[in-house]
Structures are given as C-alpha cells and as structure tokens.
Amino acid sequence: MFRAIADVLRAIGAAIATVVTLPFRAVARLFGGVSDAASGPRRRRV
Image 1 (tube, one colour):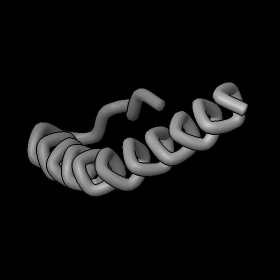
Image 2 (cartoon, helix red, strand yellow):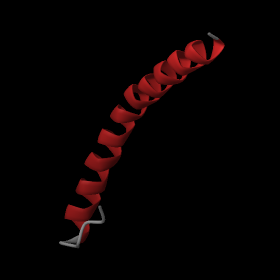
Image 3 (tube, helix red, strand yellow):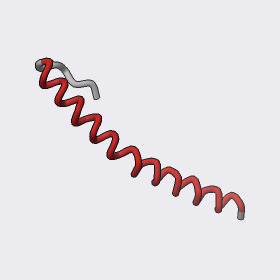
C-alpha cells in the first residue's frame, strides 16, 4: 500500500521536475546557440 503511494508520488515529482526544467533547458539552448553563432561555427556538443 505505502509502496504504491510512494511510487505515485515519485512519478508526480519526476513529471513536475521535467516540466520545471524544460523551459530553462530551452532558454539555455537558445542562449547557447546565440553565443555559438557569435563566436563562429563550432561543433555542437550533444
């Protein structure tokens, strides 16, 4: 019983963390692309 509740809470926490970090990741990629373009062509790290 408690394990099922813990699994649900863990899944919800993971979903919230993903939603919260996505915008920051998008902004970081956007600024990273701008700085890469400003400094010249360079191989992008994946």
